[in-house]
Length: 93
Image 1 (tube, rainbow, N blue to C red):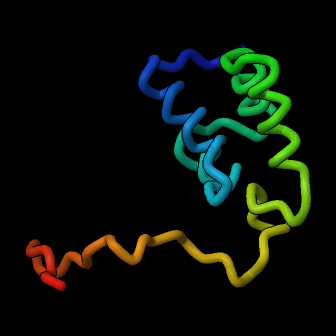
Image 2: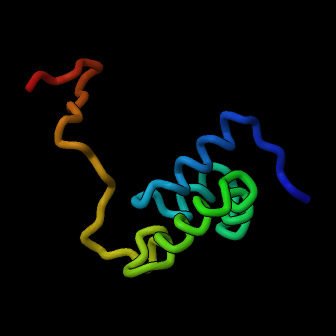
Image 3: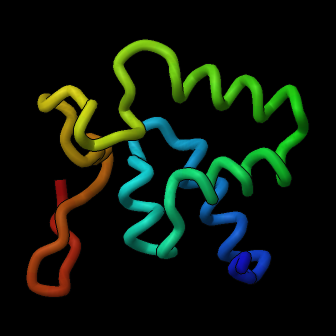
């Protein structure tokens, strides 16, 4: 039985799958969607050439899409331009 997602949820799943630093485990946690289902969604929603490019990137080199295969030096990404939030106030630089 396939799950029904809103257009917004589908867009977010595709966005998370496309991002290199977002592991499949995060997608499964948020949407209860295993890797095989994510691949099916990507195959159905992307153009064939885009899907092939995505699969090649996901499967090449040291994978970042699987937490267990990921380089331990990779942590959650935080841009250096992102400001810290403390006590409901945004810290100034």
